[in-house]
Image 1 (spheres, rainbow, N blue to C red):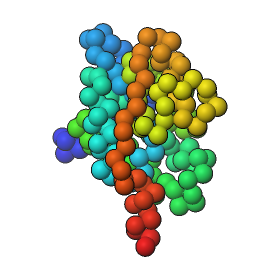
Image 2: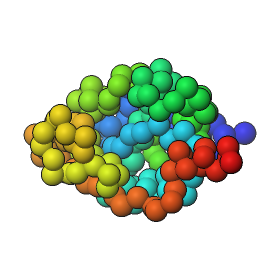
Image 3: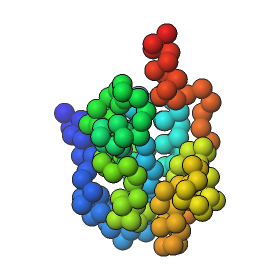
Image 4: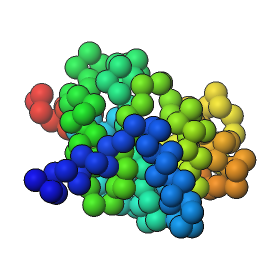
Length: 171
C-alpha cells in the first residue's frame, strides 16, 4: 500500500501546496503550474502533462472541482468522474508532483497564492494574449509575468479530447 499512499499524498489542500512551493523555491526548483478538468484521462492529457513537466522541476496540476466543472457548461453529464477520482488519476502520473482541487471558476486566486514560475496551458490558448476578455487569454498570465515568471503553451495531440472520447462511447 506504500505506492498508493505516495500517490494520495500528492493531493494536497492549497495551504499545504503553499508550504511545498516554498520548500521547492528554497531549493531553486522551477515550479510549473497548469490546470483543467482532466475528466477522462487520455493520451492527450498525458502528453500535455509530460511536456509541461519538462518546463521546470516540479509540476503542479490544479483540478476543477465538480461544482466548477458544472458551471463551465460542459454538459449535464459532466464531469464523468468525480473530483477525487480525477485528482487520484492525475496524481498517479510520474510527471506530476502535486495536485490541488479548486472550486472557483478560474485558478486565478490559486495562482496568486502559490506564485508559480511557469504557467502552462494548451495551444488553444495564446501565451501572448493580454486582453482578459479574449477567449484565448490565459488566466493568471499577467500575475505570473509580473513576478518575473514565464507563460507557455503546449501543442495539443490531434484527435484526443474528453469530448471526443465521450462521443465515441455514446456511438
